[in-house]
Image 1: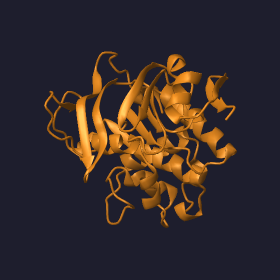
Image 2 (image 1 turned 180 degrees about the horizontal axis):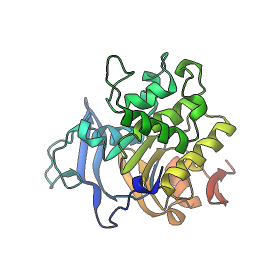
Image 3 (image 1 turned 90 degrees about the horizontal axis):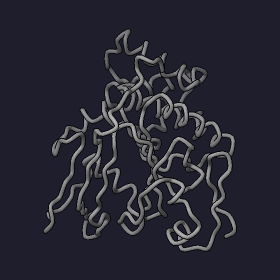
Length: 271
């Protein structure tokens, strides 16, 4: 996207502030006294095994889950606000999840998917699409290099293709940060390569990335901070090079392994 749409975030402005956030889903404690601050424009990965609570963390940001009262002070803010409208949140945070991808597995064209982001809808129905919206869709299609997908139906696309269109949908409001939940599930090697290039381009444009994953190889070089998560808790938080060590990742996934760095990407081997 052009320079006019790039973000110039303040390095000191907090996007997310969670302190002592505990969440139950039914009777299950899915988040246990989480505390984290994420700055606007920061590129960060939340890394942990399946069942660690990563998706519950995202659902809490989106107010699908709520913290419970706590003996200690609970801070639960986005942009300094304790209360926020999830529809207004889309101009601050864009979200792409596997659940969203399943929802969009229907006969909609790629262009319709992107335009639906303006209305937070699944498809366009009788929505009025303005020339400005069409221009923005053109801009996003070009930026993500997916113009060839705009007339193809989502039901005829690969997982990687449809995921890139959902990223385009999330970008229509120029969010300051993009959250991606397990973004490379079901992608083959070619789709993974293309998808990672797309994320790198977005990160370089000034949009912050919060990458939620159980795969080391999802962590693009532009991500500088890694938070380790297990059993509903954050068990490590720091610079990427410190967090992605043999000992820390081996403990996180309960398996002996060796972490290898290659071209700015990290891979787990020897298990």
